[in-house]
Image 1 (cartoon, one colour):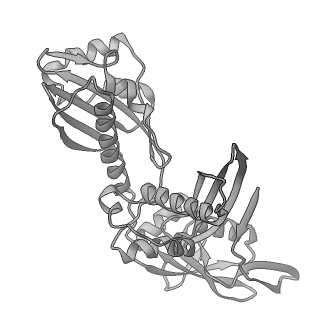
Image 2 (image 1 turned 60 degrees about the vertical axis):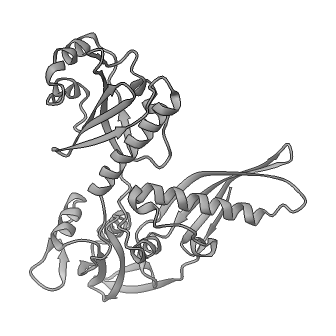
Image 3 (image 1 turned 180 degrees about the vertical axis):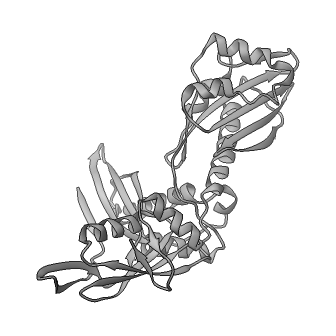
Length: 358
């Protein structure tokens, strides 16, 4: 495995306190939040006379960048990003790793891992008036029910092509992991008993069995060659309804089924991304003081800042033998910062201009 990384200049600061030697290492550059990691980018090319390995790697960079965009940008904004030059993509790469490369039957295969600088990506998107989303994975109970209006019947598990194929079509950039209920006669009878008011039924008696808080119920209404989907999305105790229609559909055609599944997954992914969107136009500057005697807490504090997506960047603005002063740029409000840090077991005294880490 070959790894390539940008070299950051490190400066050693040595000072004494309470007769103990304290040594701190930190970058003179801004201490960036962790990079966006895109793994398992696979590229293959015929090994011919004009074979150029660098061009193959560049193709991998483009593929990794596209996958990152699909991961953190909703579908309506993805079309704003086109014809980006490889030079610009390379400028946002923090590091890359060739995880595997081989020649088989005169074909070159390579597997890449690419790390993109988060701040550079955010600045690139901000110039295009795009707000990225925090790429949080999410488990959701998903129940698709087909309502054949001509036959007045419900297809819940058996003969339900959406249920059968839903988890067949997945992509690396999908954030939502769908948990489909197992076939249960009791559940079938319960759902069928709700036929007359199926649109109002919340399915709680079924979803509560799986110990997962959030759910999506998709009611797929079949009417000849038309399909209408009513999705009841329940995430974080908030319920929204989404309607989608498909014309000239044939549910016996696997391509039609795939099209419906792909479209619905985009709708659900977009909704989840909206809930985790970062307003990068908000850049709140915070000044924080940390006691130098709490060296273990300092390390944990910096690691936490590096791993919070809403932290644009942070740096050490000054220090002395008693305190280290941090300058933090946060994409959000002061209350949001305090809540985020509290969730990571950090609390602050905020009475003065410079906040003090307790």
